[in-house]
Length: 385
Ligand SMILES: *Cc1c(COP(=O)(O)O)cnc(C)c1O
Image (cartoon, rainbow, N blue to C red; front, side, top):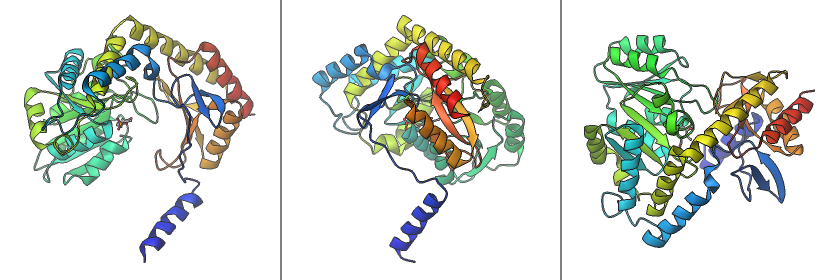
């Protein structure tokens, strides 16, 4: 087989499965509206859950940061790219979330890759929720450690899998709020199962941080659980980009030695760290609390409305409200019908979700108005007839 033949065959298979991915170009894809090809849609597909990506205070902070530090960090944090802005943000994150240390990463994807690669050796075992994000499962696959998956949110099965003989150390892996179903992990039960087997727990709270819990501290704090490793990402609730790992002093020192994504990669621009500190201030303050309350009202309004239609929802209480449709063509057709009615939603298909569970992944945000939810419900109503 030639390279060309291999690539063509892979593309043909994707097309045949109705799973060919393309990117649409948007003029603006965050906030209440998405603009594309000169048309304006109500935006139900961004992860900017609190609408902070366009918050004037945070935009201004980024500008001021750029004026003070320039636009790039100039190197890895291990060389010259760790500024007072990075340090202030790490300290603020550690203080907010109640951990001794926070280490910044360029993205959630990089943080998950780095932590799993740095921690796991060949005698070790990773036991991950089977619906964990691609960045976690991919890292686990690439690692020399054994990978076992437990049934979604099933602490008893986690306990069983961790109880099997293992020559090395074990890491349990889950998310706070699941990206495709929007439901929450039972973190206390999972942490108990891990502790019983001397395993550590890693929680990726990409969708919970900023959005749930007192002062937006996320899923773990809300459930009274303090995992040994907490990954938080900044491209969703915080409205910016980047990520951090929250951990103990020795684990932070260890990651500084062995996390290659930290050592061999340019640190985030200092201006971005300044913007993130501003985002954190908003989230912890009254404005953040109001945004979380508004989002919670939208979620209630939406679920109440959909329960009167013939769609299947998940038991999500979060901003992620998937409408499970089943087969790929139906999901695509439904997304298309909604777009014709001015509603921008994304159809999510296998392999991102299990076969037969193609869905519309709707995300509600604090940037929406109550009438946006009503208009969406009306469009869903018409589309399902
Ligand atoms: C979005 C997401 C990531 C990736 O974070 P980025 O900062 O966008 O790279 C990681 N984990 C989960 C659970 C996510 O939803």
